[in-house]
Length: 417
Image (cartoon, rainbow, N blue to C red):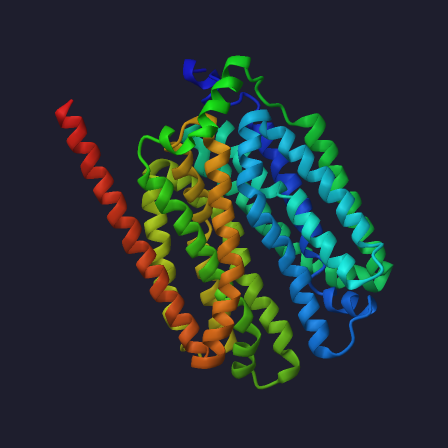
């Protein structure tokens, strides 16, 4: 074992076990968080919303409330994790989510549902907290692979959740489904509490962390990666989610049998998620060898190219194949974004900066569907794909320019010294 491997700021000797627990916890909590998607409008109707417009409106508000709240508090939880320990943030998140999810099955009105969805966003953040913990406690030369594994677990949970959400309510009822999901998150809370091992933080380090948190920006030696990566994460979320609102309508134009539209649209959405699951750890491992920023540029460029033919498909199987390939291309992007940030910030403010990056991704998740729906409604479906392709291409060029300028600057500094 190398000497620097055991340092407080380098990595935790229990990082593999911590990764396994974070993988399982993120997978289970994401299942619990997303299984309500298929039956949320039905639950809203049961709670008293009347009329199609009101049901759709309240469903959108209830679903978006969690992401809105999470975007507001992600930097706060990251900063508190720097000060008091990142395991504590996971324990807090899993316990709070277990309570709020269970209470969601007991609400009696729509506004109570929205309130609890807000509380889940404020109290939650298990997967984002796991990302910060894994990023900060994994050896830097293995960070891409570890974050890729974690990303695969998060994506898999988001994929499995709606499938279970469609199967469980007819068997046990909607309210019992929420109670079951709360119980699953409580198991994640127990595993996090008793299995994750975090390095003890010396008192001197805690005091230093407080000082750094007060002027965290000044502690960053090179600010270009810390600006570029959150912007890229927001672009990724925006570009991915801009397609989601129009998938079903787009498939409707490609399929003759309209009874198969929803099933094929689900397969199209699942194809991209499956590609991401399969490629996340592999691209992360590749990035550990060839450079995380190189993979970011390559993934953005390839996805920009793959979006162009998606605008001109003539059959649903073509769209399914292209979405799968796009998922493969984008699978390593979020792990690499996190790794670039991790490699360019001091340990004492890692959670704070990564929390800001996660918050930027939430902003993209909220803005993407709004923009995609607007462009699709006013300019047509093809405009969404082509516009998103242009944005991804601009993101690739931007990252390439920043990386090139940074490399030239570092070369000049090396020559002068």
